[in-house]
Length: 234
Image 1 (tube, rainbow, N blue to C red):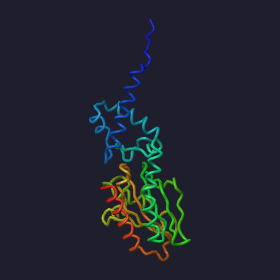
Image 2 (cartoon, helix red, strand yellow):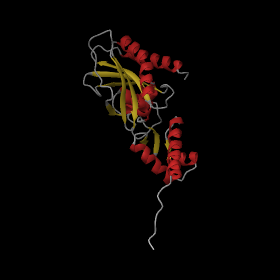
Image 3 (cartoon, rainbow, N blue to C red):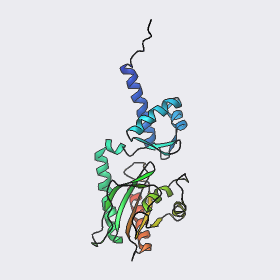
Image 4 (cartoon, rainbow, N blue to C red):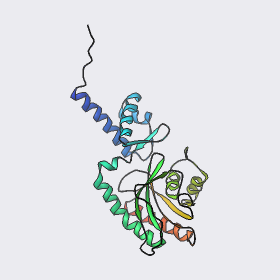
């Protein structure tokens, strides 16, 4: 007699979806990266089941493995909530506009995605016609450039740690020269509050190195982060 394997029932599929949503919600609610053991314990599942669920979530960019064995919410979740993405940009744009004009430099918002930083918003200054250009949606290595290094500085030390990251963590401000554009300087600070989202991010400014006022740029970026944190009650 040939063994027959029963096809998954609607209830089985609903249970798998329910478990996947539990994992997704857990990642969304956590301010820290979670291990498979953390997730398995929190949702009451076997580790192997958690691995399978995380694999599916990562296939759709809903979860990312940002450090070996540790996971967090993926930037792909923003595609599920497009209106919120637009709202986030709308809320952040005035702050970046004020920052760009105060520094006469291009202001930016970076969000971490795995081992990269994604440019979510770019605002050029209105006070000068000469400014650096960033492409919204562009990706950069997470340990290159002020915006990326500021994100790492807001975390605990990890495998992407560099001397630039350690210095930014010590001072609270990331400053880089020539990392992404020759002859350019960038200043950025970690930002934790983004319309209630727990993604790692940073804001900052970048300009040509010649004539850049680094003290002004540092003070302006720190002040902008303080203003944003107060607005979101952080």
